[in-house]
Image (cartoon, rainbow, N blue to C red; front, side, top):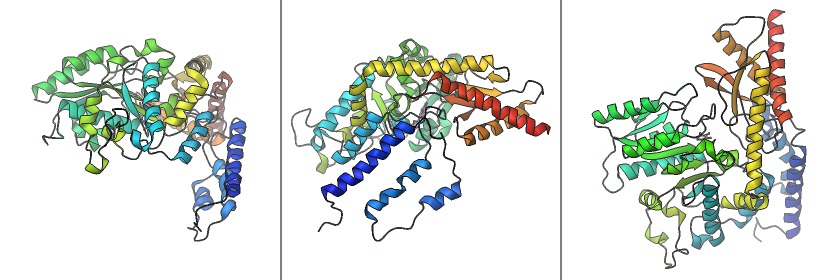
Length: 475
Ligand SMILES: *Cc1c(COP(=O)(O)O)cnc(C)c1O
């Protein structure tokens, strides 16, 4: 008797219940609150159970509705951070990927998984206008940024064989995502060697200041290691000037990396905003953001596979391929960070086959239009103030009361309170950003369920919370 082995009936029972729950959730996504009405202590009480010596059998599943009730849902009115919406066909594919349990690390450990991942990565590259790039899927943009910077370091200042410590400098705009300083720290490049370049009025890196910084570092004997452009900053979605940055990076021999974790997939709908993307040595995309895939699914694209191999290949004898055929001897562990890797590609491949690129293009277009609609509603509302241009789908704004003049600090305080009220309300979920040192409310639309009336609910909720707080102050 194998203790973990069940009968087919028992499996059917468990799978049926889980599938039913998933379908119910999909059908009720719009009705349920965007954020659970639960306190930290309550959530501990509900789920922090003691370790069971004896299993509960099928009754173990009874708690799943509680798990759903205590979850933040990818509902049409969730606009916080940059969170995709979990396309359900992809989610179903993920279940199958887990049952198949492939190790997507080499062709010989999973032929379909290895080929499908290479194919779907090529599709992503083609979809954003970067045909010919190869790469891999990752746990997310952070892992992909780390890998890209490791490649940049090894390309520009090879250390794997010589052990020479690098003294190069990495340049990015001051709006750069936190995963970049983290990667710098992990790679031992040293945070003092990450130079954050100020932005212009539209939150894009100032090329003149970048040039000055590179020249002054050069005079001190510090060569440029990498120039990082952000294509869609987290706060406002602004896109650094890619063509100019690529030219400057090339001029000084630096690696040119584009962090497009939030924005670059929007090139599927608006290629004109991303001209110069195909000049990058490496690009990060996040299908679990603006391609609506269930977590996790990031992607690193690179132009030169040899650099990836120089950076990541450390084949131990036991892992050496005994196969001659180039396809059959292909191994992701020779050009990526991980050895054991899950079959992430299946969900994405299935989702793209099912819907086709056109559907994704139209949906991204819809999200962009929802963001423009929100900007219009904010401009039309006499107590809301837009705080930054919104070239993609992140909209930053605040509530400024009509009849009382508040100081900037008081406005920050008021808007923080508004944010808490709106989030607690459960009708819409927004998050925040810092724009020119001021507190901003922020709504970001990367959701295949959102419609224009959903973004109107943001305006209503914020105005209502603002009014409510003001009347509380006055009484
Ligand atoms: C989200 C994001 C990342 C990090 O990606 P994860 O998938 O969350 O690890 C990096 N850069 C930018 C611009 C992002 O928006």
